[in-house]
Length: 105
Image 1 (cartoon, rainbow, N blue to C red):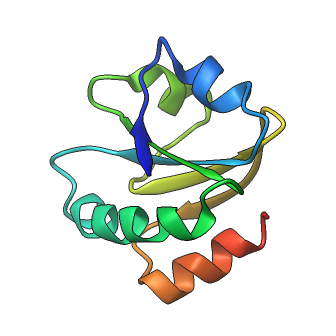
Image 2: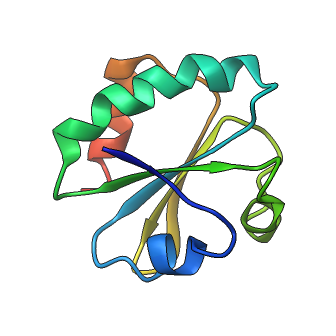
């Protein structure tokens, strides 16, 4: 299941998580973001209990994007123990994205 977060909830939802988190930094005007959304959502059930899947709209919540120097979207950042563990920038098909995510489990 994919969860939405905001600037106000980012620390609790992402940085304080007891399991790894992958955050999709996206915007509604971004074509590749719209392509990535269904791929991201389709993979989330496979990682249930092992990794949280979270989306953050950078238009309405620019703070975390600035804090983590997100300069291109879609940008997926994996967080472990409150720290950035990895970053995937740009669209990836499901198989490629799954392989990259599995490196962090």
